[in-house]
Length: 203
Image 1: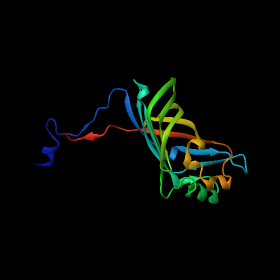
Image 2: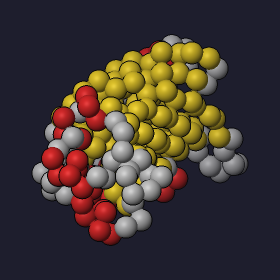
Image 3: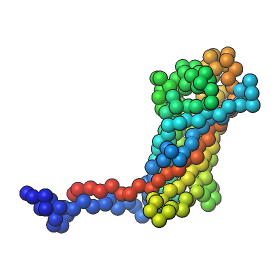
Image 4: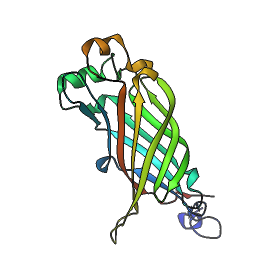
């Protein structure tokens, strides 16, 4: 069989998989996204740590927005607080334990639509090997593409972790060092997601 035979005739050409009407998949652009933790400590007004390596996906169902699916991943060792000494402590065994648990991840199981562009993501956060339910208040903003640019969507979200509810965040090393004041650790993200074309297939 020649190459021409393989690419001619009914049912032999590569064809795009048609997605369900109104459903689109987006890939998070790590160069245009930010994921961070913010907390108060005893020595200052607080500190913010930004994860420099992030990835993830977003699936939007415009006809049934409650089926929106979101997955976000950050490399634990990429946390940058602006201090090398603090980075080493935060990524070390007393807090994120990045060597044994290299990923911090959040994935949604459902979305509660509240208003135009406003919704609440209901899902799970996995941090330091512990997975617990987490609700994230989020907003979605459309970004008008240029003539040659793919469609982009920006999603910004916020949630507050209670250290008293997350045993890994209340280790003796953390408490003795006085890294935190209070129970709250704020999780913030603003990610840009790029629409993906349907994948071709050979029947």
